[in-house]
Image (cartoon, rainbow, N blue to C red; front, side, top):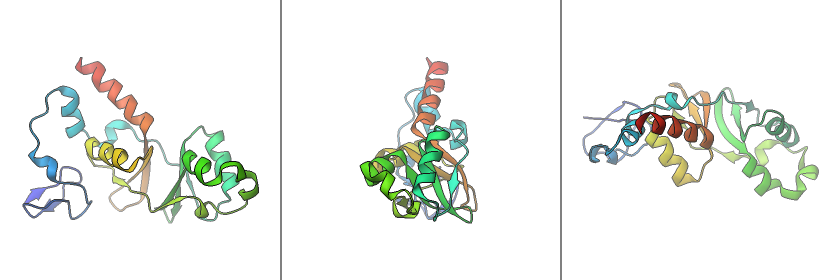
Amino acid sequence: MTTCPSCSAENIDGSDECSRCGNSLSTLHLPEPANPVERALLQDRLSALSPCTPVCVPLGCPVRDVIHLLLNQHIGSVVVSEDDLVVGIFSERDALMKLGTEAVALGDLPVSQFMTPAPRTMPADAKVVFALKEMDLGGYRHLPVVNSVNRISGVLSVRDVLRYLTRIMAVSW
């Protein structure tokens, strides 16, 4: 059996991806980390990045109210949730690309019409390297973090990643 380095689930030897979290198991055959930064990325869990407390809104929340939340709380995204489960995410990018100059006219419509549905999430005990891979491959600036029962527990942002990298590089160099 192979243990998933992201969620610690046991998988059949030779599996390409974890049966529980879907993360790639191909990194199990990587060479040893070349420096402390690489080592930290492969060993640290998402908790080391101190994901932000999520701001959640219901599916029917008017998009105007969501934009006010983004502005007033100085955040880049809100999680659209139903019973503490992630059903979507609405980010500043969604506001620009999907609403654009029509934001005022569309303000009363529900956020569900403009959110990114079913966003990729990561378990809270996932390793940092897997979150970075997902963010890079998906072009995400925000990644919802879920607990062991798939309930939203945090949001990881590019800014959190930069703070983490700055911190580990300062200690390593």
